[in-house]
Amino acid sequence: MTIREATTSDRDEWLKLRLALWPEEADSLDGGIDVFLADPEQICFLAFDDEKAIGFIEMSLRKYAEGCDSSPVAFVEGWYVSEERREQGVGAALLARGEAWGRAKGCTELGSDTESWRTMSREVHKKLGFEEVEEIVAFRKSL
Image (cartoon, rainbow, N blue to C red; front, side):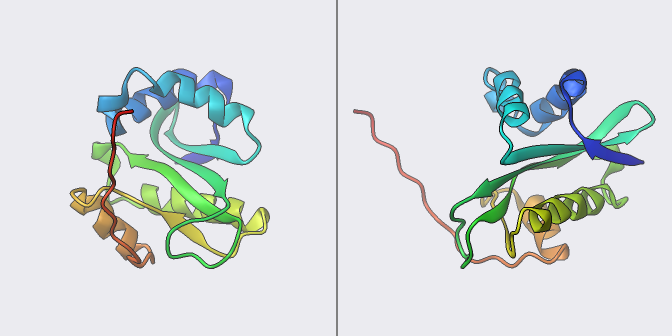
């Protein structure tokens, strides 16, 4: 397995993984790649087996993250490992790469979030050293 920073030439493989994680957001996922590639405060690392992408972690710098005391905070914006490669250390290796990026950017804390119904994601976060700090209810109103 190899982990490296995503580039424009990785667009197709990266997009396949994003679609697997967020299928309900298919219309906007391709443009999100452009945002990551253009913003120095965001980065994506891809994990590969030979030429096939098997996972990614998208990181950003945020001024604030729930439960964190410092600023900026390195934040996991998206994190996914293909089903056939789960529980083989791929997710942990991607997270370690994201943590190293955050430390290099001067961060002392790492934030992340997930929907409450994503029980596997919550378990993986805890297994890899995260602690749950808050649970929120989001609201929306049309204007």
